[in-house]
Figure (cartoon, helix red, strand yellow):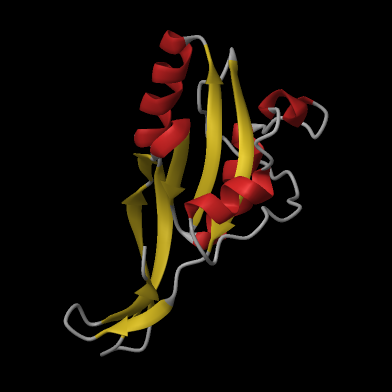
Length: 143
């Protein structure tokens, strides 16, 4: 899954936020094509910086609620700070298949991302295809 957002704040706080995002590890489930069993491994979240200060964060789909809980995104009221750049316009600028971030439920987590002094404005998500990767021997989310 891909999460698109804008992070705004004092530069050194944003850089610290970026470092924490880059070091997060997530459980990733995939099906072994030979044994037909689900295997669990860890995969690192991938933080990418796009144009106009937009970030893309790639992670396994089942971790969406946990990530949104930890990021504590800006409220609808503070989304007004974005001015005329509305999230739906940004979703169209980034590309197709990007949808509005769904409502999420806060979950209990021990994960921590330093975000004091950083506002996170959600733009959208894009789901990854799940397919067989015969060369690797797995059916998995194509992160």
